[in-house]
Image (cartoon, rainbow over all chains, first blue to last red; front, side):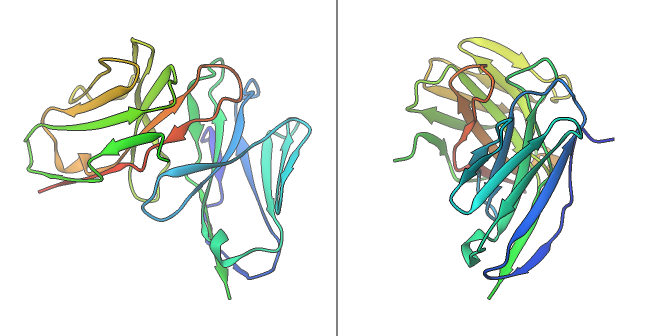
Length: 111
Length: 114
């Protein structure tokens, strides 16, 4: 089993729709969780950190479920500019510096 | 304003010819990382520095080396690039090892091997 698993997609979603994807992680001791966004042939950019209580940033909501060991990302009122690959990132067990990256979920927003 | 700067954006080298990629940061962060990313794959950590302390990942090939002469700069040296080393190389920084410290990336250097 991979340490961080994501559905690779692509998710094809009409503009304005709500889309959600999950990411599962295997290390129950992980404490740091992030969603990064990566555009084609560009560097990853931090979208949001994921906190235990869940957090929201505009149209984006992230949730953490420690019992089931997954994090989720919800995008409301999707825009064409949301098309990208979304990478789930979790810190390695007993290590704050070493992040384990998922391979990403590709999202395509269609007009 | 770019805070993590990688040069060059695109690098073409010949099979076996040494190449150096550079990264500089204006964030004064303690930790600097080098990742390799191939198409449709997750970034793969090669090594990182905490200040001057170098940490090599167990599966990083011996062909890859790094230098950090000061806080601001870090270099990735590929001694004898093979075709399998063609990839995007990403430099990232973080302030320290505390929980929930995100990593900040440069634009990356795309390396091609002829």
